[in-house]
Length: 356
View 1: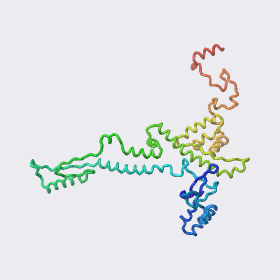
View 2 (view 1 turned 30 degrees about the horizontal axis):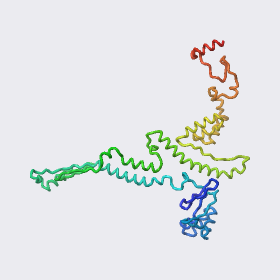
View 3 (view 1 turned 90 degrees about the vertical axis):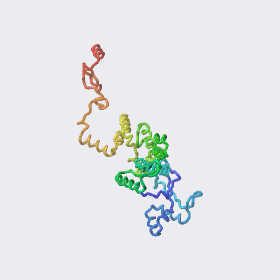
View 4 (view 1 turned 60 degrees about the vertical axis):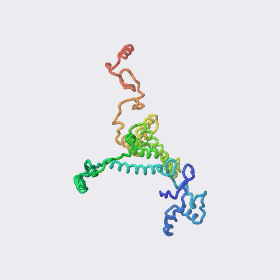
């Protein structure tokens, strides 16, 4: 496996359900300026890259449409694979970036507002006489101010203001809206809205919306899972050239941390109808080889199938036991065990007596 730089790759065509990848041979000129180093790197890549680079240097890789770049070379479809989410080549949450920048700025503003709310100012207003003259001169007022500052020097979030004038603080906030609306929450909701993800998936206060959000996220990942499955089956093609012996096929079950219990239960119900016995175990996270090895070890080596015998019920009886007749005399049979007389209803006792 060799990862290609996505900046120099593109996909425009689909061949047999698989994306056809084009690679721009300008990569070798842009990244490897030294000719000797470029030659060594071309040897590391598959032979078709060296062929494409020669065509590029000969000027034969022309642009395909107006505004296109030269140098695009179509790689062999069977030897390259591309994975993406929802059929798009750009990051799925790229639209969230501007909203995250706004959220960062809003959080910084909110922190500064909180610091401002914690700040307290002690105002010393110097007295004046009835004629409006100062009782203390400027030097005395300065000394009183310095004494207050020194006394509160170890206090946190407290400043001292000494003045002869009247002081009034004007609040520019609208008290009617600030008490009912959290501006920071509005910015946070914008981030989730741009991402297309419910905010309750991470801070849930309701189960219905959370369940639907999880289902939407699972559906968005299902397309990627199918691409992985197709890729694995492509790798298995060389091993299926002798189908008379054995045929391999890879399958990825749609199990997640949220639905594996429900899937295991559904697979168990299907087992009762004759379907695969391994799928319930696989849905619970066990490997196929471990399932087979454990069954062989428990049944053939330890003989637990004869040591631990489950209670005889219709779901656990074998064909031999099921073939025995049911009698009313308490003999072994496939029916439900007969109740004691004190547990029977009056109507049941009367019916039994009338039959005797």
